[in-house]
Length: 48
Image (cartoon, rainbow, N blue to C red):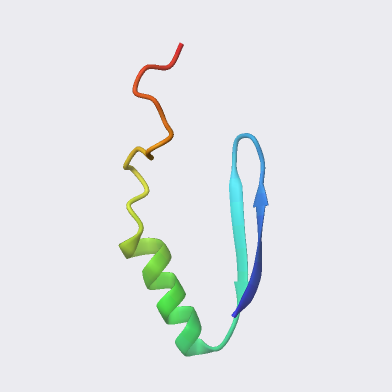
């Protein structure tokens, strides 16, 4: 599987290509296994 990531200030995009089996596993990783709403270790709870 190959791909790239475009990082911008307001939005990010991931573009990948691969076989059907690889796509299924990658889709599961991106949609189900990653907790997108959790705060990271480096993010502070108070933003000013």
